[in-house]
Length: 138
Image (cartoon, rainbow, N blue to C red; front, side, top):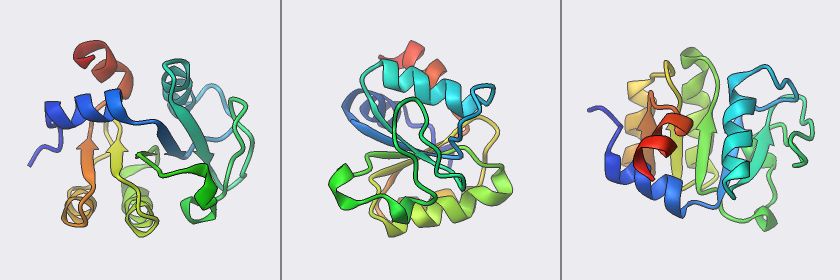
């Protein structure tokens, strides 16, 4: 299973409002920063999730998905910008907090975690770049 369904990708890019970015700290040199900024510029609300809890791109950060208060609204997509060996824990946390989808970027592949998310009813995109998909699919 590829976890790159074009209809799912298009729906997440077009219909989502809030993206939590696991791994988004205050380092603008990191790819997660670039992707979060791109989606923010395209009208998405971003929520940084990083052990530092830093404010990033003007948005208050949290140390975990579980720390995000309910009044922040539903998490439409959780972008998991962690190395593949750490991605499963972030996916499990996304399932636990009731996120609607998880997106694992290029080179972040965890088939077992993706299956767990899908079995829990989440949409799953894996090994795809939001910026590239935005350019191709909107």
